[in-house]
Length: 188
Ligand code: PRP
Image (cartoon, rainbow, N blue to C red; front, side, top):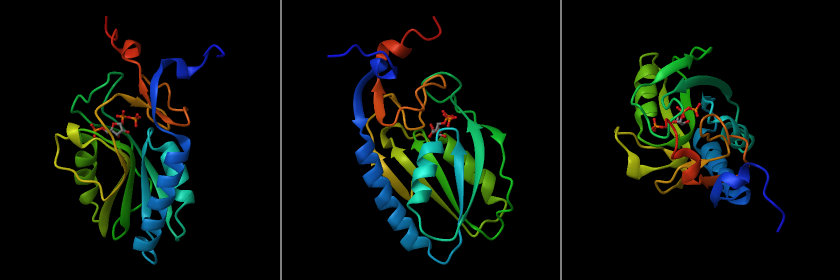
């Protein structure tokens, strides 16, 4: 077998292949197309993790809609949430009266989406819908439920397809479980 020289060296196993992700996103896109036809929703991607999912999901959605992005961070460079959410970039659109569809790569503790939902509610959108590619219900601390979830995943440290560890691995085309030795020496 050829020597592994790239990022895959740090991946213990592939959790979701490109094909699985693509097929599931088609289904989600079809559901959203059916549910939001004629509603002209605004999709709000939560950067940076959402970027690949947002791009693929929106290509599967066949309705008139607009898009905007927010950038938030909660994790720093560690592997679990600190509980603090920082808004690094706010929306540039007026969302009053609009159907808001928030697009996330992962719903973990729920701290980020719980905070964001409250933060955006005061701008009086017509509705707020939550879409996440990955859902880790075993880790939930805040009372948040995704309206559309791609995959329920175990409590493993996953990277790829937008998800990072210390800002790297986002460009892996699949979702993999990171080898513990990659992050277990952090902070030493
Ligand atoms: C990740 C992810 C979600 C959040 C989910 O973002 O994109 O926004 O964590 O975790 P929670 O449910 O425990 O709040 P992160 O802060 O790592 O920033 P990133 O999107 O730039 O990677």
